[in-house]
Image (tube, rainbow, N blue to C red; front, side, top):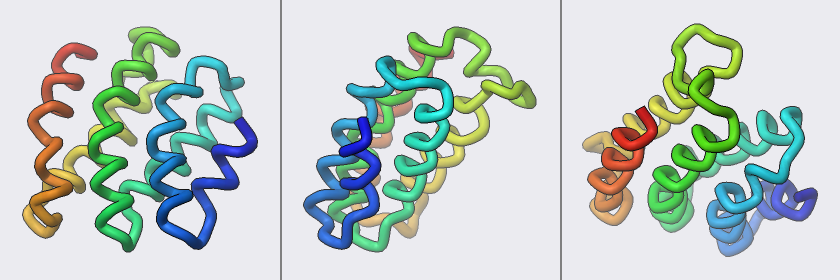
Length: 121
């Protein structure tokens, strides 16, 4: 799990792409503190300068939403709750990745992410 944090903050975009794919897979095995930290890493990857990183982050946003809900339970959906990361953090990331200022390669995954959000809710 420590490796994912190092990958997410590396200078080379290839390492950050790897972190995008590993965070949803490792999320259930993390402690609550590490989950919060890795959600912050994922949020920064969704806002990365490199469109290649944002594209892979967009591809993995849906699986991350499903994993967060499975791991943290229904409380992760509630806005205003301490654990409501889906409705606060992840939904904001979806909106930014689906925005008109993103390249088509990033916005391409919007539909599948919408399905994942629907399943989660």
